[in-house]
Image (cartoon, rainbow, N blue to C red; front, side):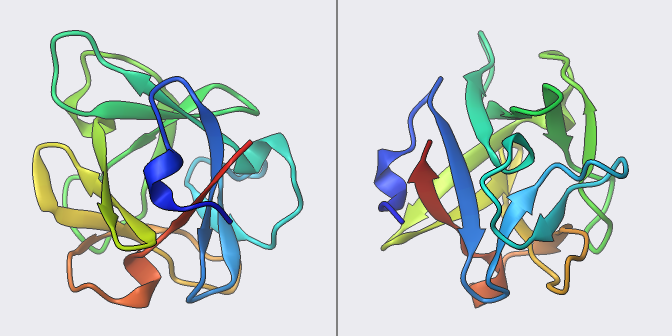
Length: 140
């Protein structure tokens, strides 16, 4: 896996969580993002799309073109929704920390996406620096 610093706007990449040994996946079966065993599918590839005039980027899945959308509170699953540049809950910041990246809400970098493991949903969590909140970026 490549260092997180290689992620760039418009580039397609995958996000791997070492704590659970799975990829961020756009879930071909439902409306929430999950982690899933690495399989190279388009459900595990993401494009960072800038939002004109706004802080943060949208993370758009390659399979269906849907965007990660934060829930209204921590502890809840991260949804996949039709991308809308005017929806603040679809704006994220990829925060590089060492060889890993945190996927933080653009409006509140103290809230990040965390993996639950076992092919489970990913949740919006309060940042604790746990391994389940750290992602490894790999181009392609």
